[in-house]
Image (cartoon, rainbow, N blue to C red; front, side, top):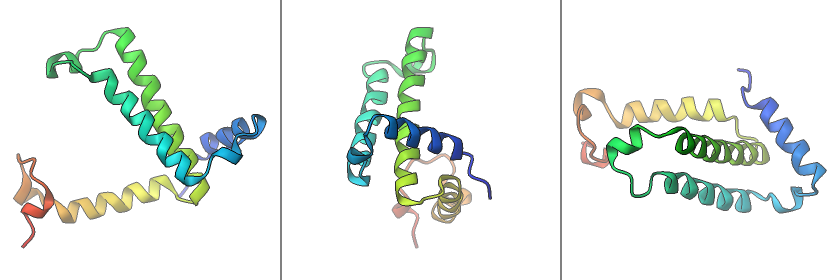
Length: 118
């Protein structure tokens, strides 16, 4: 399987190296930074109604794009530090989710998987 994030990973390595930031990019610090960026993504939607959140203006959408990119870039950096293949991890997790949430049992429900366990 090819790594669709390899060029981003390489670019992030170069970016950090040029700034001598690798010393700060431990897995712990990257995971913490990731949560900060995820919170900034949430902030883009704070106080919006469901309808407003689905109909962002161009300025709002630009802010959301930037925050999504920040989240993804930290994920790419963290995965690289730990040797995690993001695509393979996502496919493996999807397989687990299929087993956890059988469509015939969960269709139309937002309940946690523990509600459906036998």
